[in-house]
Image (cartoon, rainbow, N blue to C red; front, side):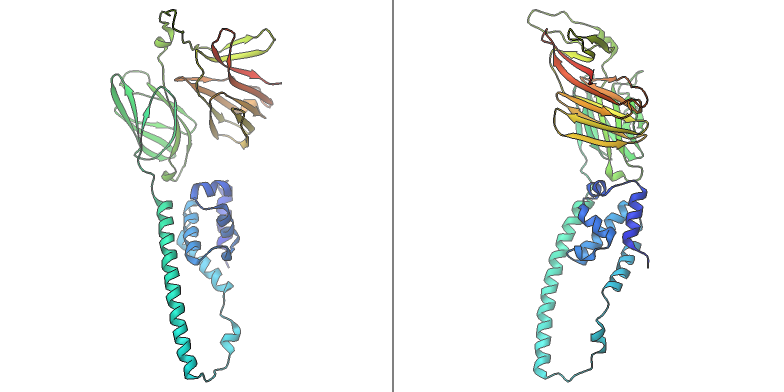
Length: 371
């Protein structure tokens, strides 16, 4: 007899998905997913719950949900056969009062069962509505601070540009992100950073980086990061500084320096104030990657080709990588995107990327190798 649990498990493992990720993306707890794969029918409060979870899980794994339900019912029939002693029990003459009592008892039980089923059905209906409800269409405004969002089809991004608001519409989130703009549709591929044109002139006004998208399921949306592109001419202009003002500066090139203590560091950004920054890591080969944000909990995972991770920090990051040449990293902040140097193949590298306040009172976002 074909096993619906084994079918679910094989499909999940074939897609390289663990139970935690499946739980996050289906809104079904890992305990229930594990029970489905192990065919632990008694773990579910009632048949309605099990069938509802089974259908959702099967569709998530691109399986035929009705076929899986049929397989489950076949298993249930095998597990819960009619008691043999009941089938073989000899017929006995039952007193009339016993028959009347039995009829009344059955009526009471049936009424109670009806009420319970009705209540469970309402709970299931509410839950299915929550699971199947499509995300509400949202409108986001892009300011001077980089924006990182998970967007869905028909969401809109508004960009204030040249005294008017330009609207971008999310047209498609399957395989590639498609954005409808005033000058046609533009496509962004996974792990790609694309410049988007807002005025019909050469060059883009914003940059869109796509870090996560599904190849088959549009309801999962797309994880994107959007930043304004500061024209080179604007970066090169330095306005006169009055005595009560501070000059803002962001270098176009990475600057390396050695402190008086002999510490080598590379300056990414320099400003009168520190601000939040984002690190995008795009993997082109296998690499064990670990990071710590603002001295909080350490996160570690193993990444392979074409996988990406995007992290945000107020103060900085500490990064560990087992194969430095396998990962391309970018720092995004203050409307600028800066590529970080790639290490050697097989190099185990530990780096700090953090804001420091120099002796002159200015802030610098620096990259320092940790011994």
